[in-house]
Structures are given as structure tokens and as C-alpha cells.
Length: 199
Image 1 (cartoon, rainbow, N blue to C red):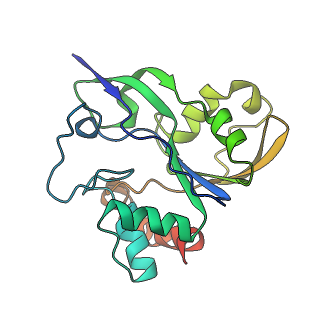
Image 2: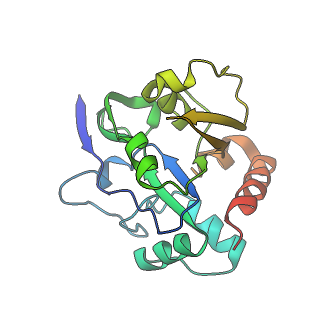
Image 3: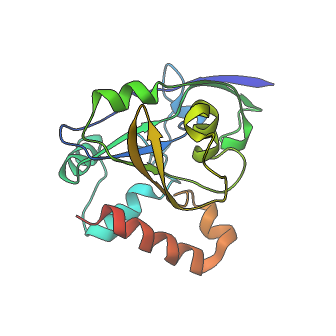
């Protein structure tokens, strides 16, 4: 059985943003006309209570980001925008896993970048598994990626509509990274996120 998911949020790009976080799509309970939020969820990007993006940023900066407004204000303070690559999709068995996304319709990333010319760095938030952000970007922007070797580099230049962007691939903020990768994986991930999100 497949479930249709429609992305619930418009891109959030503050004036002056120079970096853009690109994820996939929120879990199924966020992608319904009437959200089915759970305790600890926040109705915004990476809002699931089991996703660690915002808790890592809180730890890094010794702040609280437990509301939509606080998260938006933080992004404004560090000149970072946020969006996802998937506009609509179907999911196998109501799965929240990116690997179970099918029939994908992509957001217009090129248009978003053109509307925000100060952005020069793209931050992908996963690089493991077949359903990750980089894989989806390669499928969405086939022409731009045709000359880039898929060698899992965590940083590389990407030319889109004549402009060179720096791509930085961050390990997924999902809790499963710690569960399966161990303490060292968590430490390395926190160090990488500190380099990006320390205010």
C-alpha cells in the first residue's frame, strides 16, 4: 500500500542568506492536510521529535529552539535558508524512510537559487543509503551532475545555471546514525555540524 505525501512547507530563506540546507521531505504525519504531530514535534522543517538537527544546534550554541519562531530567528542570525528537494511523493507502507520514496515530484531548486542570488553554499543533510539528498539532487539536476563523479566526497563544487556553488554533505541528523554508527559517528557528526551552525 502506498501513501501520498505533499510537502507541508514553503522554503524559508531569510534576506541575506548565503547557505541553503536541503533535505528530502518530512515524515508522513507532517505531510497530511491536517498534521498529526506527536509530543515533542514542532511544525517546521526537521520538526520530528526523533530528529536531532535542532537539538544538536541547541547543544552547539547553548540555546533553546523549541518553537518555530525561535528556529526561524536562529536561521536568520546565521544567514542560512532551509528547504527540501521533494515536493510530492508516494511512500511504501506509510514508511518515513527516504529509501521508500517513489513517484517523486521535485521542487524547483534552480528557481529558488535564482531568487536568492547571495546563496553560494548548499548543505545536504544525508549521505548514506540510496534515498539520500545527494542521490535525489543528482536525479533532479541531471545535467549539472553529469560531469561530477559519484565518489561520496563530502565537499565539492557544483555549477548551476552558470554559478558555482559549494556543496557540503552533512551526515543525516536522524537518531539512527548514532544507533548504528556508534559513539564515534555521533562525535564526528557533532563536529561537522558545529563547523556550520556555531553562531
